Length: 349
View 1: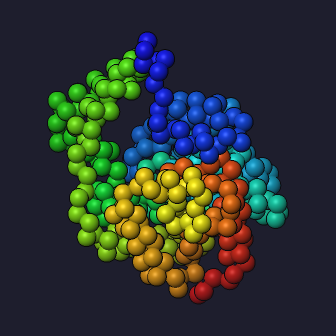
View 2: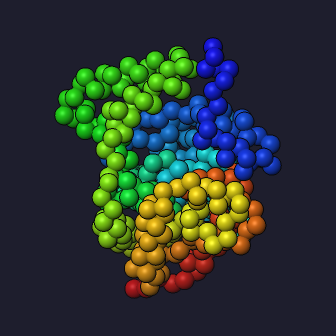
View 3: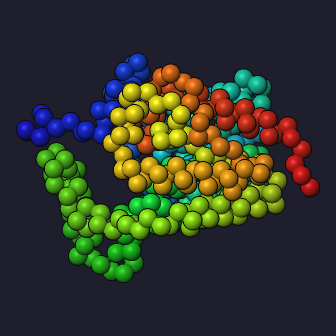
């Protein structure tokens, strides 16, 4: 009872502060906390089909609803968007998500765009590439995209720094490792604690995370000299995916997303976020961005969006890369402009 009355998740405080002008913030938090996930071969998981006031997911391979996509009878082109939690964009309702704002802007230009938001929390470019390939095999040819957009940087840099170049989220991969290697006592302890967390606020807020950390949180990657491999892994993923796109005549765009540590003019609130981060990690992330931009600057399929929010006087970031409910309007408009611009360029033979 005491836990129910007194506990307030600290991670949400900055989000609430940055979202004060958004009227449905409490409902949005309630709706995203009610989400569950389903298993998929090859790319592991996606959000299950869900319906609520602010957050809705379809049964179409875990795509989030984009209400401003063209109606089926008016579709002229199909666009797939990929990324991690920043593309999934649970910090905004369906209308304000980055992906839906791409649809808003493209259809304002009468493009007849149907946008499928395949962003999934925790995904980086390796998992996105795998999901992209799997969807191409599974969907009918008529449902293949004319354009695909990949929104990366956050998880590439973070996972490269903490878990190793090209690595998945460590606690996820370690749980699957235990299953394959039949480490059943560890899995039973983890599952039992998770089960208790469903019914006990005290256990969920004060005990479960300690058990999880003891089982799966100790394997943080401590080596700081893997920047070269992290950069080359991302560049290789872009190269391989672009090869698929070229062969199937899909226009693909790969973008480095904005982070609070890449913003040129952070607000006071954003500076507090920067000050709370590990200085070694900040340098690693900035170096990763510089190196990737240098390696890919001459490729027409690559764009650096890391400074797209620089001129905004409003605070957008409440942590390393997650943003306020309204940030998707600015970013989505710029992405739509890029897609529209590149669609009018005749591809090289």
